[in-house]
Length: 189
Image 1: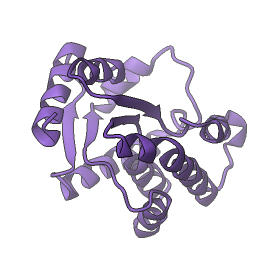
Image 2: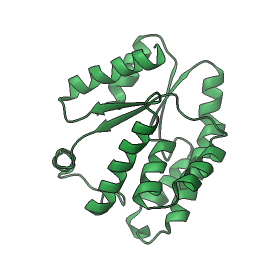
Image 3: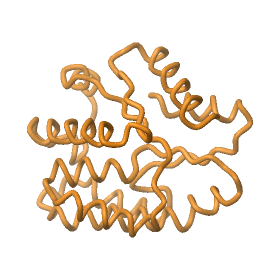
Image 4: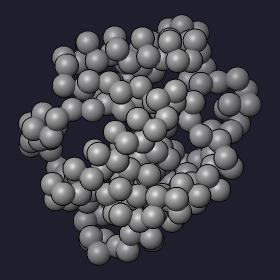
């Protein structure tokens, strides 16, 4: 909901914007995405899941992100390494230090400058998801989703200079205004 308005706003300000999603963004990444989101793989080992995310991320960094940054562009990605910390670290309960280390290696040490955490109460999210076809992660139980949400919030609290917590329960236009303000303030864009 907020991805396209942010891209349009950045482009309207004269930035060369590369819009990506994770996993995905490359041919290899899209194939990995299909495996990760496939309901038939509900029994996937958490470590295998982590490694697939990081494989997609390494390819995305090499093929798309680094070349765009080297040309002076802005990269906006729907989910990235911090999502892996929340989902595989907190959600799947893998050791956070190991999840962080593997991500660090996959990204060549280049972490996002700004992470926008769009946070809303579970009941708000449940209402918004009603009627959608859910992927393998969205079908996980409440305990998993609570661990993930708590993980995101802990990550944001630990690095407030890199994170902006956005109240996603507000009307869409108010959320968009808050996002633009955070990007202006934190990145000077």
